[in-house]
Amino acid sequence: MAGHSEDWSRQNSRGEREYPKHIGDCEIKGQYGAYSYVTYFSTDCDASGGASGGATLQSIGKTPPTQIGILVRGSETQEQAVLEKQTGRVDKRPFDEHHWASRNVALQGEFLAAVIRARGEHAN
Figure 1 (cartoon, one colour):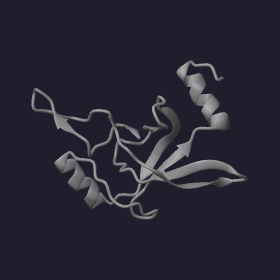
Figure 2 (cartoon, one colour; figure 1 turned 180 degrees about the horizontal axis):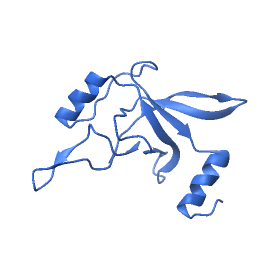
Figure 3 (cartoon, helix red, strand yellow; figure 1 turned 135 degrees about the vertical axis):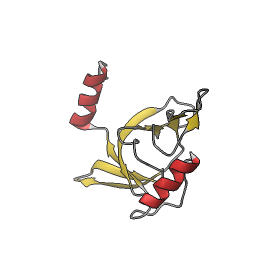
């Protein structure tokens, strides 16, 4: 997972809080869709405010990461989000579909084609 979020921060040289891009190591835990077509999936990554729209990347072995989805939302509570924002650290908890998961839209089909067009690339 790569992107910004409110719970990953640091102070810059002027003493101001900034929210750098970051990459977290996650696992896909659930896949959902219809007719053998995955439309979205859940991971065990933390996803706080500001993380929506972040890239979900997959890297197998030493291959370069490939974007496989876009983060939509997480399921952390408001209390968890406040604590993480105060500490500036991303939280990691055991996966629970209803209480600790992030939801991602799968990049495939027409959606993938639209993302490729928006990036100005050519599909293989």
